[in-house]
Structures are given as structure tokens and as C-alpha cells.
Image 1 (cartoon, helix red, strand yellow):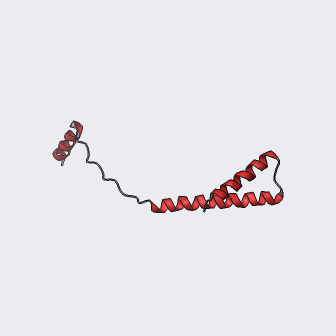
Image 2: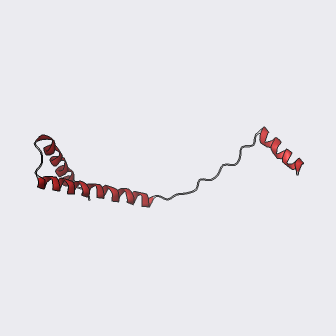
Image 3: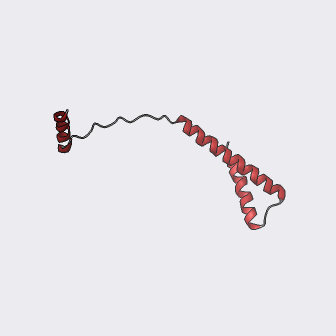
Length: 79
């Protein structure tokens, strides 16, 4: 779960990396925290996608125009 503490620690390490740099232990911690954060985001997105139901929209009736009327009458005459 994404907590304010997790985000806060990720931001702290990010700011420290830009200012003075990180020790190898901090780099490992930063990578682990980022992976945890991204995994949580992926789980949330998958959960949202699992909730989606796809419904077929009703097909609109064909629009009757003068050209359609002529083509219908010609088909009847030819057959």
C-alpha cells in the first residue's frame, strides 16, 4: 500500500541524490522503494481494469435518405 511515509522517504532519497549523492545502501533502498511504489500502482490499475464492464452500444438505425430509397426500389425491381 502506498503510504505517506513511503512517498516521503522516496522524496528524501531523491533530494539527497541530487544534492550530495547516495551511499550504496541508500541506492539499494531507493530502488526497492521505487519498485514497491510501482508495484502498488500496477495493482491499483489492474484492480480498476478488472472492475470495468464492456457493454455493446446499440447500433443506430440506418438513416433513410433519398439515395437509400432509390437503391432499395432499384433492388426490388432488379430481383
